[in-house]
Image (cartoon, rainbow, N blue to C red; front, side, top):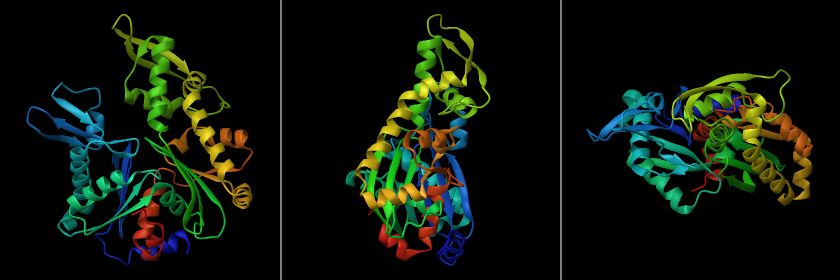
Amino acid sequence: MDHARRLSVSMSFFSTDIAIDLGTANTCVFAHGRGIVLSEPSIVAFNTLKGGVEAVGQEAHEMLGRTPGYIKAVRPLRDGVIADFDAAEKMLVYFLRKAMGRSYLKRPRLVIGVPSEITQVEKRAVRDSGFRVKASEVHLVEEPMAAAIGAGMPVTDAAGNMIIDIGGGTTDIAVISMAGSVYGRSLRVAGDAMDEAIMSYLRKTFNLYIGERTAQQIKFEIGSADPLDEPLEMVVKGRHVVEGVPATVTITDEDVRTALADPLQQIIRAVRDALERVPPELCADIYDRGIVLTGGGALLRNLDRRLRNELGLPVLVAENPLTSVVLGAGIMLGDLGLLRRVAAN
């Protein structure tokens, strides 16, 4: 069944059914009959004076690094799993209410994407959070499997399909055949590690202290994994490490590549390791079909070219890398047979 047909089939089920990509950096919500209804940063801002939630999602993200001491911005997920259960539940409730509107009082069926190496304890924590927000059913699906389905890969074929899903907290590498994972690894090096590497590089090289938001902006605007055809540069504002006063420096795309060298090398080593562990027949399939990149990290300039050169294999970026996981989870809501085959419960 192709991608469009699955989506149309899915719409015949209850409109309250919800698919969630509960990401470290971003949360996407898919509702039946409406498609993707929400995509916001996975952040909750608490007011410690009043003891309540000040903001969630995009509004909370805007507050990062710019709030008085009594406003505390929290990222409920770290490395792809729930680190703060209370904040995670509050965030889930907020996103579900926003996504479902008047249908919120109905008990939705939830399909939630989780990292491939999530532990049983972590699975139980995610599932419990789903039930505490009044879900009638909670199904967990490994993110690389959901991403592969969302990217339109033929996961039910008796052939090897390799996917690399680079999110905020984890890089999930999987080889899928006959709706099952032949190989799966969750590497806790991804978008957040890249941001931290940029922050560390500017601190050591330019004596400039910058925040998380600025590091993300640098990565998006001039970041790359391989040399660019036309060099880019950017003026960066921050605080001088020694003098403690506002300072400005100009950095280039080459600076950012230097900063990102270590996290990128760790990802490449993990992909090489995966290819060495996969049966030879499936390796031949991967050589013919190529590797598909999904997740926000797939948008890093020339990452596909870098991997192609390093691995000697075709590498393609998914059509919708940011939403592949939630689209795949949404498809499974309407294909219960496939959901039962791939669920990580």
